[in-house]
Image (cartoon, rainbow over the protein chains, first blue to last red):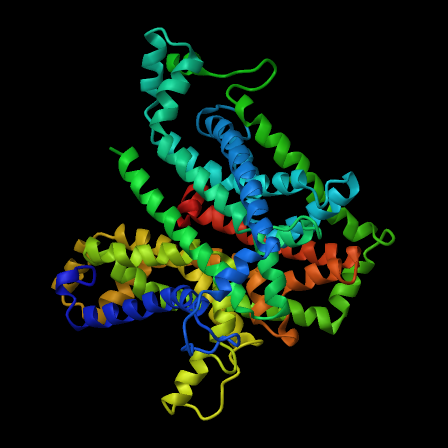
Length: 266
Length: 286
């Protein structure tokens, strides 16, 4: 009875009420920050005394913010491409390979997701200081690719596990080379996994703060580093404007994901 | 067997099918394993060989307090997250999909929104003069603003907010996998709703609760951003202490030793979790 929606009785009202409350709790900061970014109060009074676009103007007029966003986009795009390519190759081994230590390898490749990121951050920072990659774009991309790799491997490997390998074999029997079969049969079949991998690994880099704080230099800042710096200094409404744009981007990504998934799964 | 021989991508000298993992292995080996191992070695070699960094770490009241506080925060966050997530997951598992997808959408939106954005929102909301204090005062619930930020309360609210999706989403899966018939049978046999809950629903969802709870605990232990922004100086957590020791104090030996402690605890808990659910289910939270 407890798992029958129609026969829960008073419990259903209680559960529904609580769920509504928690949903509101989850939505609250997101909506709040967007409203705040249009408020005219420099001291973040809420409800705001008036509405304005001046924080967005201030944001877009500041080359430091724009440059930080571009740097973030560039690094995240490169990290996502690398993570998807390397993750795709690795997934084939992890799912189909028959060798000793396969589980161990899977564990190793997924570890960057579990290890506290601060440990990795100071480790890679020390390492890059020694080999001269600290504060460089290449260093940033390498570090973020490592953090993004598990987020690329998991969806691709899951999709590959759900793909019937005999279809690929059939193509080979019909005369395709193994490579052709993979490129033209298998890859299109697991495209949803590849697509999710691209989104997740992009976000893993785009939103990454901790490694970025260590890696950043005065001339190389990503958007999260810029926000972090502003938060430590003061709670300027310009940060609210930047944050709202990030919320908008998240919404776009969600919509694109939903649409593409629907189209691809047809 | 034939299917296997058709498509194995064996490279000379490597075991069958392992070649594709080579780039990943090189990348992770060179830029993950080597730096982490080098860091751990530094904890026993910097400034001179020996265990003095660990002695300093466990011998000082300040650092021991950081350890205790880290475990306290992680435990409180985990318990609160479980208690809040369970009813929501329960409702989501059984409610009509049309309505449920709205709730799922909001959960995903919250989870995908930039971490700093969410934390920033809580910083403003929880301020002394923030919306929450004003609303409570306006309603006459309190007369003085509550200290909601720069303390354990602030960290707990901010962390629970971040962890909730990681608990709710896997729990929905666990609850959906339970056959409603078992509970109908219990009711037919005369079990009261509370008996059915305690003796059937809760035990059957326990693996999901344990796995999710462990994941939340592990993630909370090493969390840096939210405690640093919402917590106070008197209740610093381990991750922030490590970052500060290295970045501000430039004490690499001590920072590395603290990092090793965090890493060891995390890996032990991670191994327990892998035992419990297997690597694949672990990823279900994504």
